[in-house]
Image (cartoon, rainbow, N blue to C red):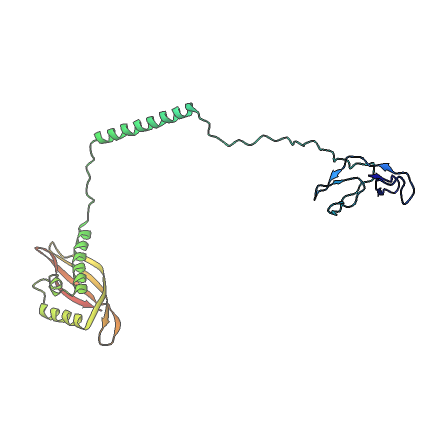
Length: 247
């Protein structure tokens, strides 16, 4: 295959001069490139493949497409990789720790043995004044009456009163009527003015707060009776001998 070096036209083997400019033709190099599609041999200056018609990248005759210079690989220096914080074994520190633990254990054992050998100190009960003791006795009686109201136990209620209490039967009827007409919801009390009247007698002021529910009116009520009571000491504790309602 021949080509024109001036107008870069390709001619057949039968031509010696360029059909366009008349320039003498030169012989094309025997080496060429393969077509990317069909693999046929192509030459410089050829715009299309003669076999499959694939458009080609043309270069002037006598010139070869320079190969792209190869770049030297770029190496970036790597910084030192951070090493994980690993626990450094220090046998000396472990030994010291074990010694300290052993000393603390020995000291605790020695202290416990000394404490066990020490004679026990006698415990003396706290002194209770007669007035405080008397207040507790009155509180026991009031607590028993409170429990009898909540459970509607007439026997427990009457056990808080002495057999010499005036009109004990009328008191029993009064309490039973109260329990019949009302539901006892809550009972509390306040004790004051506790005084001793002798070895076996005492007095106190007892104020009650009794919350009841009235079946007749379907309403709640708060009863706050206050009684001045006299107590006497019986065989099984203190009991109310007489009472007087206060304003």
